[in-house]
Image (cartoon, rainbow, N blue to C red; front, side, top):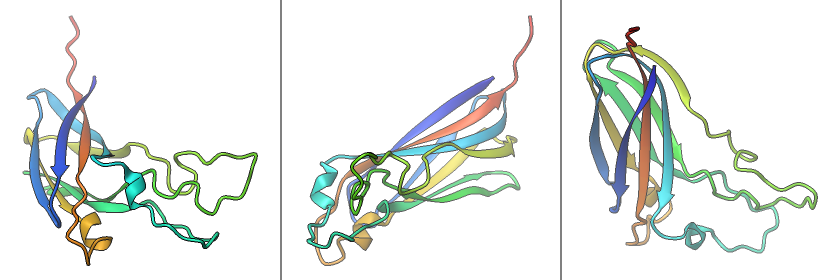
Amino acid sequence: MEKVATAEISINQRSQIKHFQFILPQDAVRIIGVEHNVWMEKPFSDLILETNDPFFYNLNQMMGVLKLQTCDNTNIFYNRDVRLDIYGFSLADFSTLWQPKCFSHQGKKAEDPISIPVSSPIVYGYFKDQMNEDIFDISDIAWCYRITVYLWYETLTTQP
């Protein structure tokens, strides 16, 4: 049976590093996927730069780096850049019949499939903020946001 464990991370300081962990149940046998979502605490429209250039376009904003590791010989099994999925979707889009979708200018957001056997019930997580470093290097402003990490796993099912 497939189940999910979640962890929520709040970022509110420049270059903040957060450590967290998942404690899986004893009947977990395999980690099968990882997902993550970003929620801004302030409206993200405050971050979009004003420009008169019609060809101005930015990719989805890099938020930071997410790493997950186990205590066994697998060690670090997930290392990805976390990006905000709504950045610049309609910039430099001149069509009138087509509306940009949430996956039109960047990869479609979906679960990253993984197949890791579980020998230890503890999975450690690490997230380092890079958004506040990259955009606001001359400002003292730190944008607050939350990241939710979803860890999908399989459990043993007993037949009655």
